[in-house]
Amino acid sequence: MFDFEDYFRGDVTLIGKSLLNSKYLLHSTKTVIKVKNHNHVRLIWDQYGWLPEVFEMVAPMRAVKIVTGHISEADKTRMTRDEYNQIRSTYQHLRPR
Image (spheres, rainbow, N blue to C red):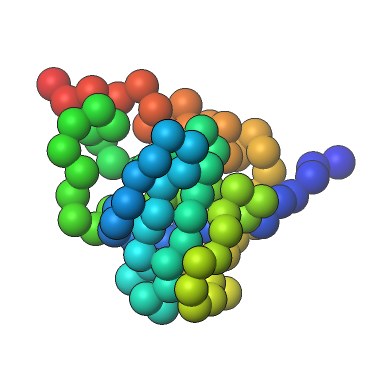
């Protein structure tokens, strides 16, 4: 049996960063969220360099705190932890060539 969990998946802009959390602006609803740094994946090819102004991110909802606003249903998805880990392993070790 597969255990599905709720995840945030949407376009964001990084607006703040600390040792434990990063703060993002969601483009769909102008919501501000805080996400634990070790629990989210930026879906970009250069994980160690410059961030584009807007990029897609995936994070377990249990690691997301809403600061202001709301997360729309369009920005929520359900997947297994294995599916999420596959996304993490695809993106986390990428460096530009």
